[in-house]
Image (cartoon, rainbow, N blue to C red; front, top):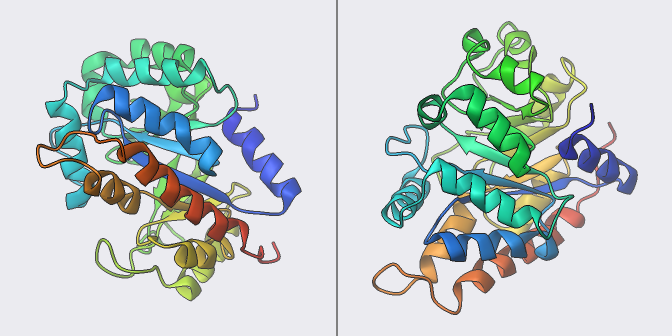
Length: 278
């Protein structure tokens, strides 16, 4: 079964270019503004959109994304409302892939079977759940695949060749490589190290490999897009959103454009990349 994610990467392969994958927190700074931002992203140049599910204890997130999650929770965002947001997006856009990213706890509380049914009906295409290792695949990964959702795994510089097959076993859609070669918010990931890592992962899988972490500028996005099937940008977008808010942390007339304009310049960077020979 082909998902929107599979279809998007097939189209990009024909165009000979990489994807720009964007991440924003659902409900940041409020549900209505958040939906308006996400609706603006495809036109701005986002190929795939990751939507964060706000959670009270986001242990893998840096300070910017933690703060975004707290703003969203303060604004009353819930997992149910996140799925409503997806439905709202799908009324106007039936082709852009949407991936929900976050932690298992809110899904577990919601009820796995109910969540998967509701997510699929809403128009979710894939899941990235950062705190469920392959050893827990029966919890969510296998049921998600059976429900027709892609289950996207993270690989890191410490995922060695011995561990990689377990990580990739039930992965679908794409592999998300976390290029941690510096601290959170570093100016740019090391593109040579990333190129070597992508090549190593591709020896184990035919799936596209997208790279995130430390990509903040069009130049950095371009450098990564030359080595991988996609560049993932999150913190820079969350920071642009935050910087557009008023002193009370509320959206302003600049908020949607602040994010969309940055996505536009990042998209130009990605589209300017010459794809390395596969």
